[in-house]
Image (tube, rainbow, N blue to C red; front, side, top):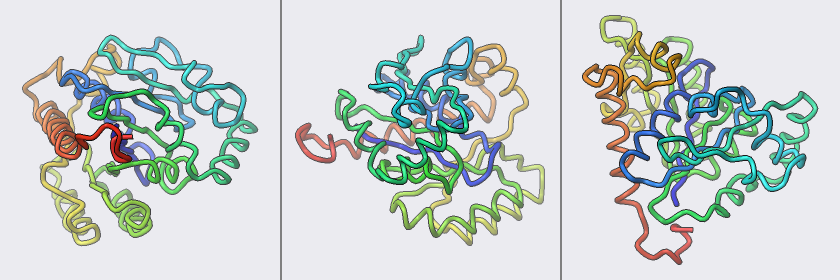
Length: 261
């Protein structure tokens, strides 16, 4: 099983939305998918089908309040197995952040215990980078997708943090989310970002802005079902196709090997 961490260096980048959308699109491509939420905002479960915010989840397992964490997982109608973060108190978050700092391989070891086939994938939605949660996700990941809106402050923050992110994981790709080509400022910002991150920013890793996205999510649907011919739907399918192809090309044929876990 391969692990893909979705991170961002600012809030509101659309990281959780993208994690949920990719989980569903990959599941529809008959790929086994598990999605893990280690962001205290606890939003991923709601995007993947829960009627309310999960009360117990990954955060409590890391804090040592529930064992094992696999007892607090759900599977949605698309076949995605997911583990929400859960609603944690400040004291619980302090406890599990201390544990993450003391056990830098906690998340990698937890994911390795999932009985998934080699062609399966784990998608991790995490708190913004840098943080203890993001460090664990990046450390566990075979691929890091760093999500950023094409806005000056967001791109400047990513450029400042990118060296540390690249030092933590050799395989980092930048996904530009909510791109609006009509805004000249965004084109200028992307040029500056490309100079900062180099080949981590590719043409294929862009999702255009679509005002229908929050409306689809509010109805419990998906943009790529509601408006399948929109540019953003095309972008999401393209990103899912790229990720699916990357997973397929990188799958180790030997299920007993370390890479196949």
